[in-house]
Image 1 (tube, rainbow, N blue to C red):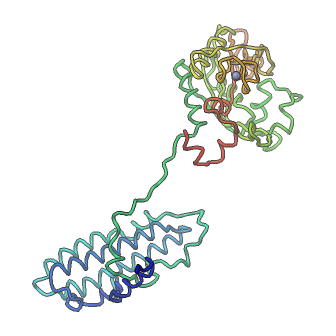
Image 2 (cartoon, rainbow, N blue to C red; image 1 turned 135 degrees about the vertical axis):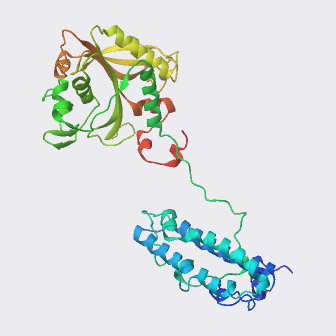
Image 3 (cartoon, rainbow, N blue to C red; image 1 turned 30 degrees about the vertical axis):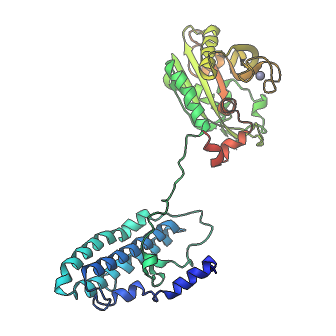
Length: 408
Ligand SMILES: [Zn+2]
């Protein structure tokens, strides 16, 4: 009759000698431990070394809940092994090495030196560097019995030898976030056209966010519902456009820049809205810039980003900071312009706003509108990423869910 596995194990376990603790072993001489030959000595040192490694790994994989606790645990483990008085290494020196019979001295000396070198990884500084602090630790590590310093560790041959067939610690690799990926791709296209990248503050003055961009106080974008105010004169920028003014003031003209960055609006999160989102803005200012330059550049950009087959279409629109203003649509990349659910059967998808820079905006940037003209565009990076990767919920970008992020 075959015994159930658990019972068998129990029976085999019971037949073993009661294992001696590491403390008990280092309290005896080699002769008392029955190690009268080199082979026995080697086995003993191998056991000690495996126990040391296991205790260190135990601490490393448990980690600590705070710096203070990590320091405490590291000190306890260090002292257990390396304390000058009664540290395990000292005891081994005292009992095993110094009291070894003459003929075993060379072997014991050699193994002891190796052990001393190996145990150096338990120095306080080494441990503090290696033991992770888990700030999110839900289970307090204090109170969990830990081999190090918390009591004697049992060393039996079956426990002490590390199982080298166990898999190693796997740390999941991160990848580039889809928003960053799309942002870099768009930047790359414009960098190749000779544009440079300009950035600005996310906490912005009302002047740069609105006034300088020809957005009068009566404009609905200044309504509390859309704008997050820090105080009466300060907002979280609602678009990347304030950097247009800042760049004109800083560099003058000619100016060819793109402006990537985070923007904020008082929007409730849903599948297409988020109170924080990313824009890229483009601005070209020179002495003879026309709407034809704008159309040519954006058509080139759309073909680079969405594919050579894509066609662009410009429709009149209104923005306070451009005159004339337009919306750019591309032929639907999902149905090739035939009409589908995503393009609402129209064959076209709107992808950005654009226009010729308003003379008032040039003036606020310190440029003479009689001498200079320019165009600008603005697009939402999330929307591009959603189209490119066929993502139907904008919230997925901000949830840090590895199952989503590892797909890119
Ligand atoms: Zn379509």
